[in-house]
Figure 1 (tube, one colour):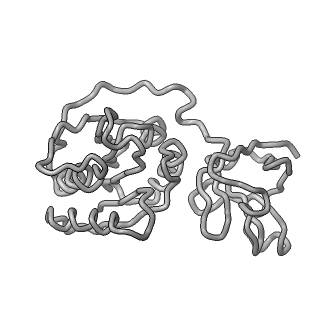
Figure 2 (cartoon, helix red, strand yellow):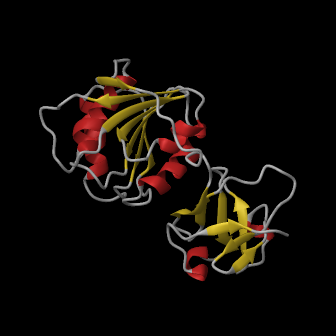
Length: 242
């Protein structure tokens, strides 16, 4: 399986061109549009979102990750294998959280120079063809890199909003607490209490819950948390105490 994870948006020609390249390369495995509204130009926020989505995907999935504000610059194109999952994209922090949390990782720098490579669309011209090759059992077209020693905080949770969905629910980079104490969450000067699901709060009431990606999410029952609190990607959140 190949999973596309980008900030391209759902409209325009870019996603279709990625699919066309994979089809032309003879890929017969499913190609999943995992996400095309990842935080734009923000590989670090997207890294936490990607890490939360990976566990739900089959072993051996090849992820094409393109949140690449430095496309066409000196940033390296890489392939990462982390606990049996594959990641193809720019070396700009997008794969660092997945790598730091994995038990076993390997990295390669892609050395292939395609016949056609736009300076602004490496997703189509480089990353998608490399992903197709790996998905079909080919070797990585690049040279192995030494193991990376990530700073201790790379695998840590991110105390910030990393995604806002169409309902105005604000997903944080926090995983739920693993002890029995359920703390409150500090958001924009307010302390929010935990609810198991949206309907456990009154209409218009703000809450935090654990969403389907096992991340802490700020929500308003039948409303928009983003609007209520003026939230955007990068807005800070912190745990409080009961």
